[in-house]
Length: 327
Image (cartoon, helix red, strand yellow):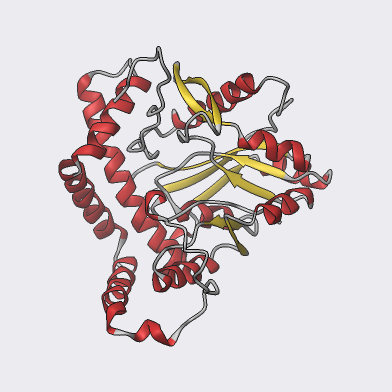
């Protein structure tokens, strides 16, 4: 069984529930019928309607909303433009501008693709292909757990659904602060993932790896140097997390790169899962070298479909003394 961990519908919107709050994930509570929740119920009905719209309409709406977000979310736009300038110096200013705008459109497309995965999964029929599944199967046949190295894709939970066409995925999730919203998302995800593991359940995560499961992990964001080291990312020093080294050491699992993306005519899109061979000698004795090699894997993945990545995150926000500020 493959266990696939993706963090959230919108990565930045997930907030950990208070430890004092008692709530069973996915459990309905009569309090959810209180008027204070009516707005969320109406919003869910609206999203379900959007999910049954033809793709041609969804695409037009996503394009409109993506352009609107690009124009209105000035801080996110500025971060996206700067990230693309730094990572793709070969692009002209016009290319940077056009691709930055497309990042926002692809993010909105990812929302509709996720709604389709939740409420209208038959839309993906005959649209998905896979390459390299044997790399996971071989590792698991040898009794090894698999840590899947990937990125924060704009496909969101649709990526999990793509994987579910070929294996039974699990997800590691962070509960939403609003219990009704958490219940609704949990139940939607239950149609995709075999199991959902709370992000605080590290023992469970390690236990699954030791038992030969495969778990998605995306070491592509800046969490500072307390959790990582400086390593080149697109040729620029960036704070790179190293937690995956500890997970691999403790569980004796192997690291396998995984990438999924949309391709072809956007009016009739196709989706591809690319699974690459196991990364040799990871972890090694050199954590900077390990971080560099993982960043190179992510770079290679992102060059396949550059705008299908959450470039609006401040990937280079950590700048130690002596390093030029990026933002």
